Length: 557
Image 1 (spheres, helix red, strand yellow):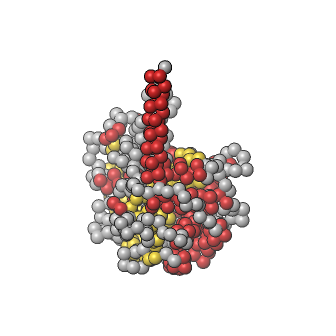
Image 2 (cartoon, one colour; image 1 turned 90 degrees about the vertical axis):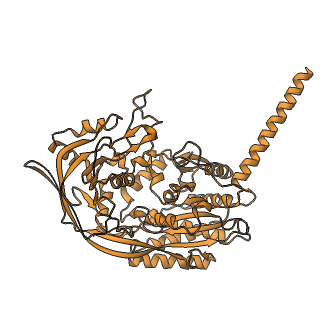
Image 3 (cartoon, one colour; image 1 turned 45 degrees about the horizontal axis):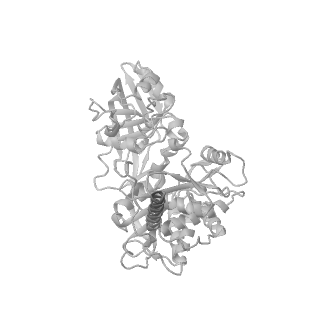
């Protein structure tokens, strides 16, 4: 009996010691918990969002009068809040060299096989551009090859380019990841291959164009389908206006000459011209045994371009850390200030206001900066705020910053990205896009518990949202990233309300002039979230250890 009691006693000591070690580890991870959530001014958030999305700011497109007004507004706000200039030259501005390329809309794309021909009209039947700094690019009877999903993923034993040289050719690819069936339940997708139903970076259009460059293809055309793309073809058609890229010394001449999209209906017609069945070839592309298909068709087009080189701007401000031993380390907040500017009118309105995407998030970003600047005692490490340009052009501002960082990436503990903001009221949950990728989740879980909330993963992982905003430019270079989104469990709202507002936004407002400040906005949930995001940055800035990517994940690798 005495032996049993001793065993129980020592067992209890072991458990207590283990719990103490866990608590110490958690505290070292998340930092001190004595600082309370700061006040966030909902009226200020609304005021900033209303100003930035107003007609006066003309849709905030890079290299326009809208940019001039936006950058001036952000600099003025940072100065008034007492934040220091954050750029390396001692100002609030990091210049971002861009090239603007506007294609002539009279272009046509022609597929030919023998005497048969399929002619596609620009914008209606295809959308294409070049990122090369060239006034004219041509495809002249370029052989067309179908390469499935255009993926090379050795960790999954997958190669869609096997056995083929596509240099100088036009490759046609499917959007998304290969939908590999689960070997146990074929009605579901294999969670161990390409993330199951969740999109991986292999499914993103940016990856596919990167592969076209790597494989020295002359052109790449992605087949658009609304489901796997996550948006309608009308979103692609916005890209028929001026496109930007970072102006590089090589003139971007290593890129494929032509990058573009064709709707699935035109893809089916192309395969029919080739004497093939699109659906059958698409099904084969979902297997490891797939091999590229030479369609026996040629593609021809000429893109005539108007070029201009411009200097856009990231706006950079900081709160300097108090600890001289670590103040050169930083926590980074990002949010993109740009939208699409002036474009095709909708109901007579030519201004793409971008109120939710992304004026209200920038407004919240400013409130977080103000809250840090107002602290009587600064955090240990510095906190850097970078409002980036040209996110809507392919994460260009954040890509430029990641290649030319103010705070070296090896001393950047984390990036917290604000993309949109909850304008529909309080929620019991908070969505974390990319939940499970890093131990920033541990910080977030602790903060959520203090707010009486819980974390949930992305409800639409098939949209690949983790790869579609500015944190990704830092994440792909190794910086742990936190990408929050509003929750779906709304207080006082019926079940399914969260899904309903998401669906309404992406159907009726996303990248359209109708994305304006609405009279029924309820920013109480946005305030709750901004307090959360502030605390995330504060805890990381105070912590004794750097956050880490979790072992086994793509970013850890």
